[in-house]
Image 1 (cartoon, rainbow, N blue to C red):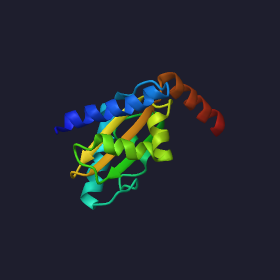
Image 2 (image 1 turned 90 degrees about the vertical axis):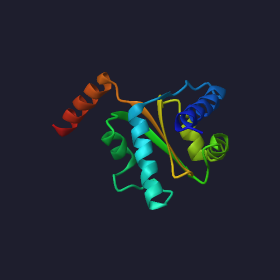
Image 3 (image 1 turned 90 degrees about the horizontal axis):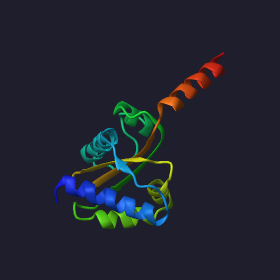
Image 4 (image 1 turned 120 degrees about the vertical axis):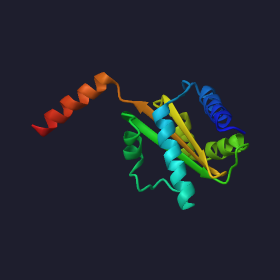
Length: 145
């Protein structure tokens, strides 16, 4: 299976689950795709299933990819190949933490990474809107004064 087909299948499976609970569909975001793929590449090179990464925390990694966010989440998996999208989704949906990320109504965007024949990453996010950025700056200023 081509990576593009794998990504299409992955977002379709996520959005099918979200639809069941009345959550709006997610859209792919190129910056989250970059973050997810870089983390997947790290897991492949270190042969380790981990959220820890020398590039920093999840938030650090996503900001480094250029995604300014109000909330983020991440799912990772190992041991599923390119034709296993439904299997990995079933495993994630059976785990309360992974399921919470998939169904989180606050998230609007998704990035998917796959590598090494068995490693998967889903990075979820909600961008920080311009008006919220300004409010946060004001809040920071108030706190600092």
